[in-house]
Image (tube, rainbow, N blue to C red; front, side, top):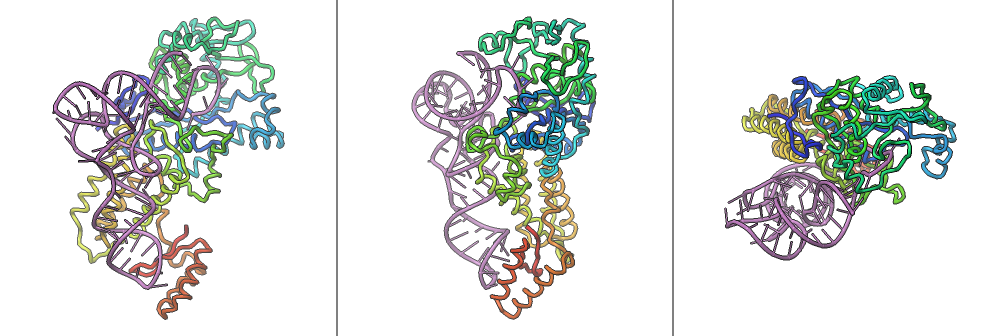
Length: 477
RNA sequence: GGCGGCGUAGCCAAGUGGUAAGGCAACGGAUUGCAAAUCCGUCAUUCCCCGGUUCAAAUCCGGGCGCCGCCUCCA
């Protein structure tokens, strides 16, 4: 079976048909590093991470590039006005960070969050500021071919009229935009819908020399230039949030296809926004949650990851603390199953189980290959969980098969199921083990009060003890 | 005003013409010194509302209501 994905451009389910067989070139529109990423940003990052992992499980090699937008959009004025707005910007001002320092700070925070949520490393994270020469070359070429024009003021605009396909992605054709009539009118532009490729602005902190004088690149051009540099003229998959479709991706298509004459990307994928309590996330309502808010609420990053990946990427996902708590319980129950998996040489092989595991592997992959139907894939995972729970112990061969199956699931889910669930070895912590042993003695003496007191003591140290037929097992968390 | 999407149990969420997956929570039973975990069972005659098409609709069509996104730098 081939991988099918919903393409925003054709608004239909399309088979993934890579330019180079077996290799998927995926470009993810990455973070703008002027603010700390919120759970909504992480939702789309997790979606694309799951996609990348699913493609790999499907046997494809993925060349994933994610840009870091660290140029533009921050003027001296913005920085000066930041007081009372965003705490991080206030901090930036206090620390006397300039635009470069702010970008460095939030880039680091982005990568830190990525590790917390167990997102795989992309092949590269190109920074826009490191690719200005490529952007200038791209713009120069567009000017030469008549797709762009420079104004006396030193700005360069893309001439939308020169690209008939404008609007094919978002539906915002020139006529539709005219009808909406909310386009900013600038006298120096030939047409109101023309967009900036290069801008001159004396107040901008980040500036570079160019054939049009000192200035900075327009927002859209970085993705066109960097995607082309690292992945070639035609991408297999280009992703972004639903808000990126217009103007960002629409403009990228115009710039890139005008230059190369080739389709910019074979598939366009967009994630729906995450809502909070059924409403748009809002800073003023206090619903713009960051990873540390989730941590402060006592929720694990694994639960957050499970929650964020459990809903289809093209459906709105409603964040509630109740739903996150449910995700936490679900992850715990998966851990419990892995923890109680046991091999017993006295148990005979169970051919039915082997069949079931093999079928589950196929069904899991088939669900993901069907436009990343994670919900259906998770249903398969839970059916395996339930089958394993029903069996007390497995033959060594079945035990190995079960672990293998779970490992394969986890290659996509990224929850660290096999690691997180492992009970601590008896000698992992002598002090804890001594307490566990003392509790056992108390239990044998039927001194339940003492046994419970020790359990409470252990709980205070973040250790849980479970009594099982194989004796007490303890673990953290 | 223009363009697009969504509305399934207490909560999260699959299913897009053939008679409602899965998870969480809840409830009853088993097991347990107590827990935890686990097992068995229960939990939507019905898919926002009203019409229509069809042998058959959560799924298609029309109309409402509600929510969400984009319309030049927000994932």
